[in-house]
Image (cartoon, rainbow, N blue to C red; front, top):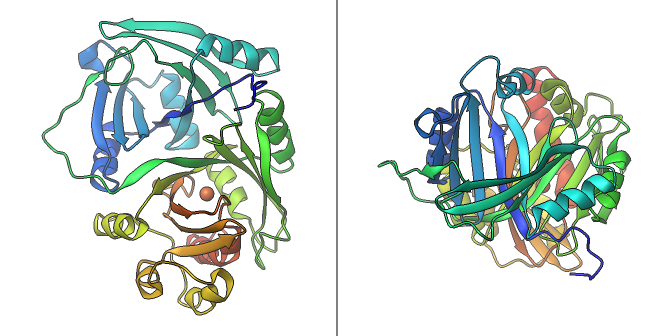
Length: 365
Ligand code: FE2
């Protein structure tokens, strides 16, 4: 970490989804993705307006929150955006300083530094707005020993399906409006001190019909990586535009979760009913010309429809789920890195053609 990093971040703390029915969503993330029950807050813990379920797998913590009253801003959020990601929380050593450094550089405050206390200690939290209605909350938890956050109690249901080998959040992608990618790239650069990793333009990522532009911003220790996408002109509607239409604005598009055994993880996820984007057979006819030698058996990867890409430093294996709600918005990526630090640019064309087949079936191309 460089000495002049004004916003040191230890990693992703949690990702909070505002959903229509957190109780059922929690069951889905347990059953389909293998998240383990961690903590709960709701009527039984003294909250009047919401229920929240925290689930964990490896270092990945998801919080599923639903409104209990129609007046709640959570209900408004869900009505406008559908199920979606409200909070990308970042684990810091000093949440007061994080707020001060970012707001003094132009971030709009979402939450002034606040000390939350219960019998397990204290957590300092603060927050700033980012693209759309998405926010970053800074979480300082060095003096906390409870299961998750003050106000949550341990959640221990009898139902506990096993995990699927997911380890940590690799990156979280934001979709922003036409012409706004550079605005948000500058936001992460100026306000949060991130640097740009890789740039590619619509010539790199387009098919006959769909196109996008993307830049990747990362913090100094590379634990936080935020690609920012904006739609680009194609013959038909970009998948980024489709997201923005259905989400009613900018928002988080996908969370990439890392595994160290993608074959075992994908076998599990498929058996549990997770739906993945279809990858055409023809993808596997030419992929080896592009990626050369790999450790895995190609037939196994083909059977599971795992995508492969290579850069100067190694290769990666990845796969994308279909949207996990009825609006074609938020989805997940499963990724295994074998040296590669990139994001699968070589797969984008093959992938987009697969997405377009889905768009065509929804009549939104
Ligand atoms: Fe990704």
